Length: 193
Image 1: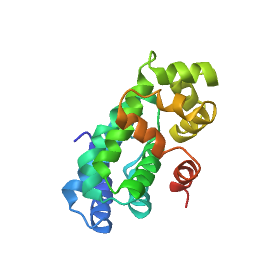
Image 2 (image 1 turned 90 degrees about the vertical axis):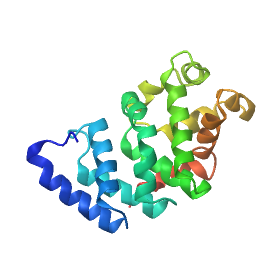
Image 3 (image 1 turned 180 degrees about the horizontal axis):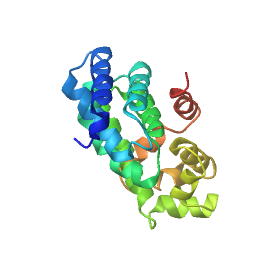
Image 4 (image 1 turned 30 degrees about the horizontal axis):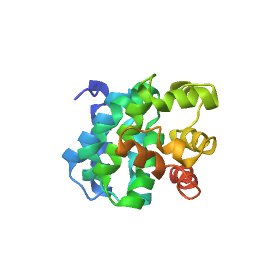
């Protein structure tokens, strides 16, 4: 499944521990870890690090390893292409599932935000360039999280202007769930130990 032969035993050991700790089956554990490592690359994130991050999501959010395994592939390719770290995505998932209890719906919302951020001609990217003088990918490359970017943008305009940036309701709901007085700090704290 894309795991280098010299790393298969370590990978499977990590997956087995993740399955046991996550009250899941080995297939779900292997599936989700393989997706993360293959999309981001082993030089970017190890199976052990991905496992640790997933358990933080499970601990702080309202989700399970099988739910994550079934829906995370919705988000990973776009996020990785934009340079958005897995930890950034995980913190969003933790907070969104706390608020909604819906893992698959949270992934759809995050993906909708990523889609808006990918299009250079989107209202979102135009507003970022107008208000923050940089594109989404430039801000991510500087080390800012998705939530930080959206919160800064939201603070630079009226609520109506912010809502009008998103043509899809899923993107708007995703942006609202990671911004604001309660949500933005929660996203920042979600991956801290």
